[in-house]
Length: 338
Length: 284
Image 1 (cartoon, each protein chain N blue to C red):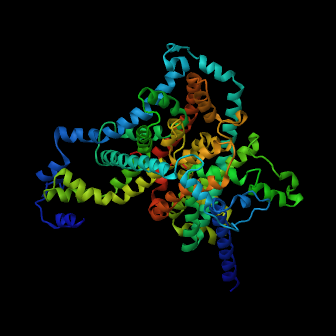
Image 2: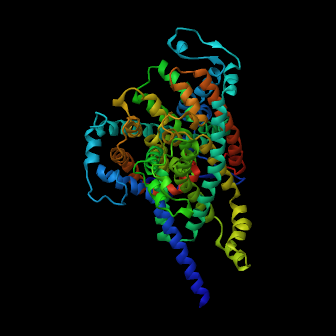
Image 3: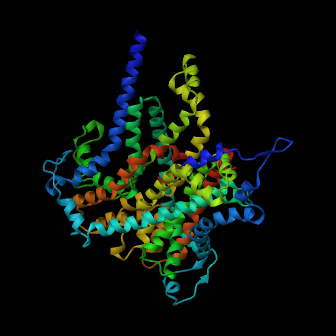
């Protein structure tokens, strides 16, 4: 495959060096790089297919969502029985007056507040551990972690629902066997984890933690590999303990990576859907809805209220975009966009 | 002497902790596989055992011949494969073209395009699905694997373009110029020089696109709602849930059959993946 390349570089093509030392491409090269209109149009033609796909299926629906959120849009409008009408901020007023919205918002915020630090800390600790392991052990642990990461969210959720099932689930059995001073006992027998928000979100937290810490661990590990070992050595020789070494050496150097990981985690956990949808019983328990599930329910449970659902979707999107703005800035600051 | 001994003790502790972390992480996967092989009496036994005492294939048999859902596993495997593979091929091709554009050319909307990709990547699927549902309904694309494939193509593009762009940028320009000096035209340079060198990157990004499409739930749930014969595997696995009586043996067997292909695939390519993980920042 590479033979043509080697042949090409070995051949002594006439390369003109200008007096100022700049290399001027021979006509054949100019032909490849293109000239005039072809050269100018080439990049636009190359991004055209992806831009059309993204424009039609990502950007346009986002705009539509905004439009629908100001319209009265339900079943009569879909079937054509009634025309869509503009209702101004009516849908948003409905949303704000709905106690379900505030309950869902609270759940979304609390979940992110608990899960983000939990996954970041666990992931970072595992990343630090991986960095100090022998090669075989490190490969074993990171393979195990990446298997959890690659696990489909559906399978992961289904497994955890089974682990926490009141009839035959392992969790209740083990909690029952736990000594009383650790909170164990017979009252765990047949305990339902999905009937109330707190236990349900405990299970969701475990699913998300299990699937999210590997990504953070591997990212932190990748960052650690870029830090020269001498820096840590020097700090340790100077008598710094692991805690000090982390905060004085590792953390400042990996700050950009931590910032990106923090923002991504907030975005993912605030917008969590699949795991919450499955564990809370597929739209079965309204008091366990988070923002995403509430919006979905408004749109896809009969009778559909697309206008109100869109307003909820817009609220969710705006929150996520505000966080994304931070993410984009972090990327630009890292020089990733240039 | 004592210093090397404490060093050794530290190393042993570290390895012990690492072993525990790995085993805890693997446990849910183990439990899924173990349950899938247990007969019903052991699944609902009052004292669960880690391994099945009398391993059985009956859960798998039920899932594969479709006695629960009325259609064999192969139907859903085929649906998933069709949607996943076609979306991976198309989106990788589109992403490669766009990556060449942003990595090799300077043009007016280059930075804008890159930033736009970062932003649209964060749009929540469960919000967009509302507008997409109405569009697809109007376009007669509901209950259609083609419609689902189109969505998977579009939604994997932002990440794959960002990842591939780094791989294209890493190919030295001189190689392309050298080939050009030798008289190769633009297409020859692309296929004979750039493509072979970007191939490893293309594998990495394809794996991400594959995992995304294979695992995707929200769109499949919404767009394949009524037509059981069109279900992809994630919807098929949760289908058992919605049926009143929960047969955990069947669900775990279905889950194994859904998860195993992606796990095996993943183990084969995992070393490549680790490098690209942060670059792509794929949803977990």
